[in-house]
Image 1 (cartoon, helix red, strand yellow):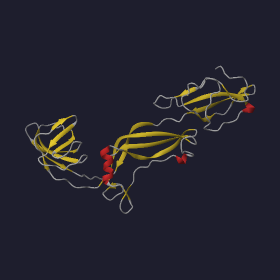
Image 2: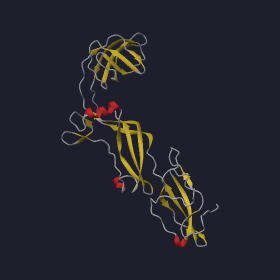
Image 3: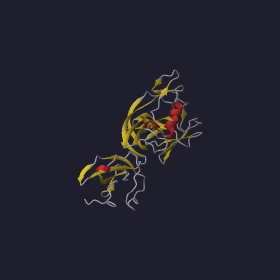
Image 4: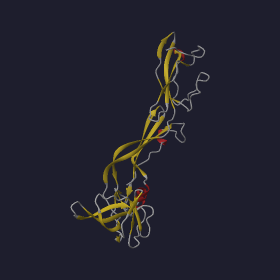
Length: 298
């Protein structure tokens, strides 16, 4: 490879060839590059990490749309004639990104609540746009987000009839005698729609494999705002539940902190919760990576 330099004065490092770019993530962006240099052996000095890259040739930096900082410098190798060659690696601070993968998460337990009044269904429910609309004979008192037990009878092949029940969530538009729920699709003919009843259902803590989101964020020590050391990078922790005695528990109740009602707000809004504490680790040089895993509350 032909070596290029500016003026033949090797008392300071001179560029020796083009940059070699790397695309480390699926965003297909060039987050770092390597650059070879030549210098007199007697004048070789290591450079401090996080030194800002400044092109040494006029016009050679026109393709640099980001700020790149020194993250690695190789040991020099002998070229002869009193010269040596070495490689510096420069990286920009990557933008936040996300990845997705399955994860076995232990969901919290929920204190058992109570059943609402039994409300009888009038007529035949209708379904459209993934929503089933049910009419009750009297005002049901069910609120949006409540869990609802719906009972009906179906007819199987051969004429046999059986009672059935399903659990649904009350959707926007639920009020008075109108109850809107996630669509109900029965594989067998419904003979009779019987009743709807709100149910504050409890559960024990349980583990389920679900989809999780990994958020990657990057910080350059001494450059990123408020980040003077790696210890300044905030760690996001998994939620903890504390009972009225100050003891950590795995079940939300009306007296824990947070309460069951507060957790159910996250469930109703489809909020993401931290599944594992953030992990802080070096990425390149003084650029650190924070990885936090999230799952959808349920």
